[in-house]
Image 1 (cartoon, one colour):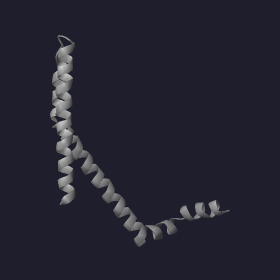
Image 2 (tube, rainbow, N blue to C red; image 1 turned 45 degrees about the vertical axis):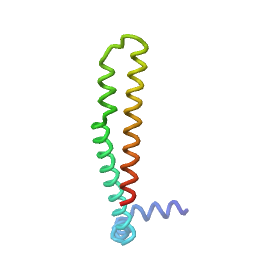
Image 3 (tube, rainbow, N blue to C red; image 1 turned 90 degrees about the vertical axis):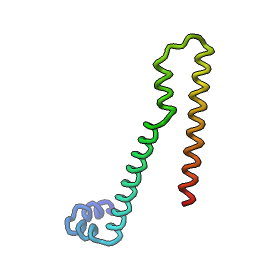
Image 4 (cartoon, rainbow, N blue to C red; image 1 turned 60 degrees about the vertical axis):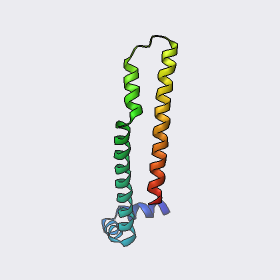
Length: 101
């Protein structure tokens, strides 16, 4: 019975228009639009940061080379790890500074 009543109300154009014009629904739509926009901006910033990443460049560079022996492979992996750790530390510091602002 309740589901039938809700179905009737949702399909009533007049009721839907009244709800859309109400302050709580408009505010919810504004908040949703704001959250989506902020997420898109954060996603673009993150992807730009990854593309500028020294680790990504280094991985691409190392992947193009043919290793001579296992020692060389170990050295390459160590360099990539060190670069990655340094970038994570820098990102952590940047995030801490942004939070403090």
